[in-house]
Length: 422
Image (cartoon, rainbow, N blue to C red; front, side, top):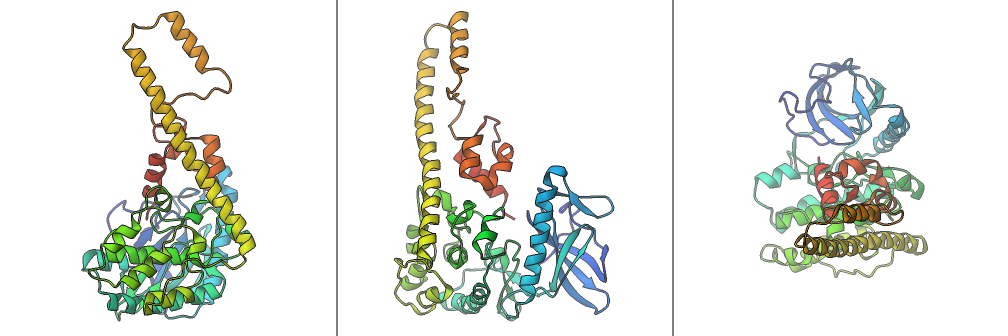
């Protein structure tokens, strides 16, 4: 639950509960933030007379708000996923409620109401990294390490308990008024078991999400959160977020951009950030403890580490790279094919207009079963291919295919992912 100044603009958050609405003994004030998973509010505890932050389970793709404030599935087709997500939300709340760590935002209470569920914690005064370093100058290395060290302590405690955050980004790292950091908004937290990870729809933020989060069976673990923290550090030291993980498979500017930051930061510190941003998960630090020495004390980087449970991880990694390789290969081959088709069409256009019989013949040829139609733009993935390669985004195919061509291109996919950023 990210904190900060709420928005009082009319219709800024049309799905949110109105100010003044009461949940048990809590009175809703302003909206702190909203993403595809839930809505966070600043509220008043009317009994203890203190401010609290409340997060409401509200998956925007699956739910709607009734006039009486209740939350319900959009339709019968979404009810099973809505209920499954609601149960997972409560599991997460119970999991996070057991953490007692000064750098982890603890859930003090959770309850069900209005057909959905809520997590509650104490309201913290301060600002997120996204606000702090967007408005002000970038910190020097010593100041950045002072924030980073306790943050890593908290993340290590979370990982030891078998939990992954899975959505670390500048907006979810909060700096209190006293300068101490705290990690918030475990809206994508999941028990780090193989079954639990494979059984949920990924929630990710392009630029801060590692490649394994794009695929349902990707091998996620502590190294996945490490990638996200490294991406946050990259944003701080360069002023720009890293390219999304899928784009980096084709062209990776990370090393060049980090090298340009050497006037302000040490080579060892930048090398540790680059280690955490390794595209292949097996080449990243496998634990916070491994990464800490290189990041905070300048210990040598070792990017050839083998992941624990190597046999299972190798199979998972092979699947990830095979899927991504097939996707990229298809886009390149299809793109070359369509360019050739376009050249042929332009050549034909310069010739005499075709007869009716010729037009009918071409129409018949295009309708031959099994023959792939030629789209009028750069080729992409068909719905079947899209579903096979990116199953977690399959229900959004029509939304992503903005030109209604029946194909999803790389540009359309990246545009959709950018729109999902909170």
